[in-house]
Length: 317
Image (cartoon, rainbow, N blue to C red; front, side):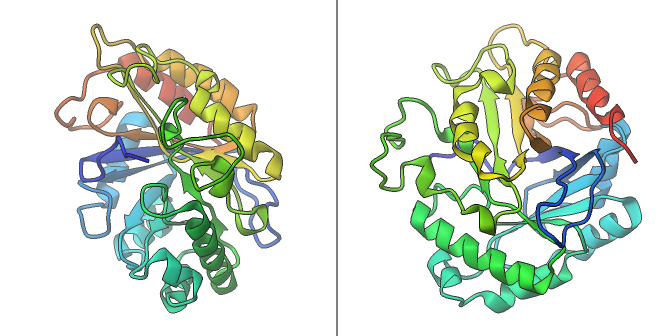
């Protein structure tokens, strides 16, 4: 799928987490509701992705508790991320890619790299191999690689929550790369779904940008009204695993900009009633809600900030 979200720009991810429960025997019981964030000049280790940005987000959006960090070539979780986890309560969600190709990962060529990453992760944290893989491989390749990564990571650190993340925002009705007719061929959602035995939850990213006419709303609405989300929800909701929204962005970039608040409030109602345990608002460019410094394109949205603060206020320590 063609990506619509550049990964080299300033970004902040805000995460809402509801209890995963006993997804796997080794998993700890989590708070009923927790909230977190990531702040970065890019999205990879060494790019300026520091705890300071996470703490700045807390200043504006409330007592955030989960922080995403990304790695592009098998790097270990950076010391800053571990310190932020241990000292500041920024529970780590680490999304990593390896120095091996997905085919090589499936064959075991990167087992040591995956073991080292998993071992370095604090207990009861979150780990994703190759988030949003659809641009870079086939569904068959991804599933084989993720199953290997899951098995190796859990053997090294059984407390981890290992979660695949898909770019559901690109699976638009009418897309030439989405057949959805049951014939398979890597353009079917079912070709990409990691079996439930190899996933502690499923992650579905979603973005709204008004300039993408014909597929996204001008003024944002509830997640539960988005056909791309419903397509994926229907595909994975019956697999017996919790669901997550690890990245979510709302940009009303046409005409008079509307508040994101109603969409955040309505989406929270739908998500929490449909077994979504993690919800992430990714602040980037026009999607920003609250930070000391806004990038070009960012705009003030007091009601959107208030809606997210309401979500944070519902969190339990």
